[in-house]
Image (cartoon, rainbow, N blue to C red; front, side):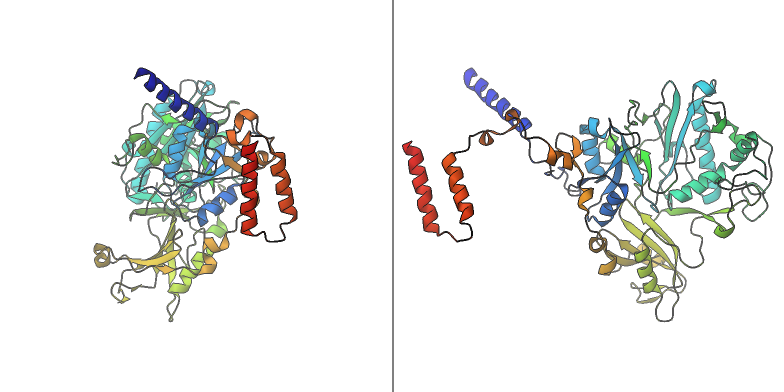
Length: 536
């Protein structure tokens, strides 16, 4: 009995080694074992624009991530398109390939408030980094409440740490339960506005006067009367930044700077992920010791995956939350200088003249064509792009026709939603009765000429990178041009020597391939070949 069991174990071990040496084809990737998860999508692109285009045209719930690779030029990245669940599954498994991973924050996507904080420790001896972070969280929460009526605390802020002996580094992600910003450009304006006191003090510390202020500096003055928005006159304050003086830090050269990195609010920004480090570095973002955020439990997900999903800046679902904005009052006269300050106005749903666009011009024009007919000049009050669901939500002005009541509402406006994955649009309503009934109209197809499946054509150059089932990433051209595998790498059936008679028969077949060979002749030839083989 013991001998049989040992032989059985040995056979299993041999099979395991065989499967490891000869895995399934690299393009095969099974669906995750969760019935509620999307089908598998795992595509790698050399250019960010190609990855974004593919994600827009994909029917699955996918997103774009940037990967830094070791032993490549500094800053060189490739771009991965996959779902959140698929990424997390392999993120834990292939740490050597996915250890330098970034979330791509698409232009125009609804997102959370986020901060990148850092300073050089040797140049700032005596500073208490964790205390500075807590003071900043308290200040931002107070400003969100003052400007938008949004209540939050440190328990709503995911605090991630990747500090070293030389550098203090934190990421903050505000996971607000009922609010998010229209996009990261609006987040950037909000951050600039609430930090104006300390920004002005830094300019004065650097000796910048009204006459020498650089026009490209993206800062403005704090408005008179604290946060009063009606006054057009800026006021000067004494140097020091007031209550925000704790945000002032020095760089390696001893120059004054800011704890907050204001350069992370650009379009299609790459924001480093939880558990990832920079290429060439070993310090990844982990949960800070003073973090107070705990993700909401989910029966279908492990606690750490819930934390990972909460850390994603654009992982925001359309659930009727407030969409926060901070508009520039007069873009034509906007100058980031002390002489002509730009006035930013916060709002939750402030009407705008004309229409407000989304990242998809063709879809915007189609929506306007729906609300501008029969003599009615409808407009778009605000468009919000929920990247996590590939959903555009248009709040409509001056066009109130509702399918639920089959007439125009007297006072309440409607919404038109566009599902980019399914390529359909439908109508919902702000009316309390319609909302209580959770009314949603039938879905109508988008015109074919504005659908991504019609517009997008694959570029063969963009299929340059492949990832096999062992997590190795390499160029497809390199794979095609690589040397033949050694005998140890080949399966048994490829090690058999070629039969000369067989090769001659194949050559003869190729020469006569223009003529159709009768089935009877093929069968007879096969029988003769087998009989001669056995005879030998």
